[in-house]
Image (cartoon, rainbow, N blue to C red):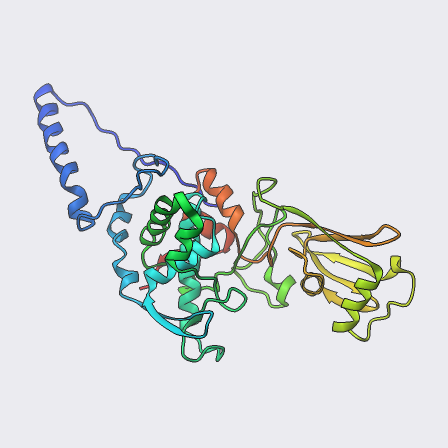
Length: 350
């Protein structure tokens, strides 16, 4: 969603003597600038990574690329085996970004993911959900956020381990301490994989309206793996699944009449429908039949029900493939985030 533009500077020509003098001063200044602004670390580009255009990173961002702010914050993470590990915010976010978004994505999309994950983590740390009392967050994506240890991620990436690892490191350090705020407070920075042209207003999924979680256009499409999917069920399978969760449903009649009254929201995702006389949300139907999203159509072909589905995920907040499409268009991570989270600002969390 955001745009990334290049920055340029121009000056007036001077006399020949002035030109030589200024060139010498500029050469010396540029030689020492990285050591002065970022403690000598500079902005690392891995040898195998694609060359990035020069000067696309605003000069005022160089001061935050050391990662000092995130490394000064601790996160208690409950692992899949139930153990709790304490680590720096920087190390935790590396594992989240590596687990939640393909490392092959554009750098600005990865930065947007890092900011969203950082914001979501801060919000979780400020609340006691009671789900894991000894930890701030857990590694279960159905509860908090996915997380992968560096060794596992590198093993999965194979020959790309070095370049991908460095790329994610830059996404985290390049957004050090930055989060997404609405009226000065960290937001619930929800994200998902891909949208069917638009994201979904939170009210359609959970019944609660959230000012910054509104439906917006999302530019991804056929480049998304399994963007269109299909799920097929016999009448007996539909009946068995439905009655197991909703025993009051009446599925005794003609199967062509089992599904009715389909209501779609602004995103064209199913808001609600009637199944066997019971009104369900699109999300409930998605869960019931394990569909990739609630953007679907359902039809009876005489022998089976066919669900044609577009996109993947709950559809609320930032679309990851949409963020990558925006980054390819030249959008910055700030532009991506403020597009998907309506009325927000990207600012320092600490």
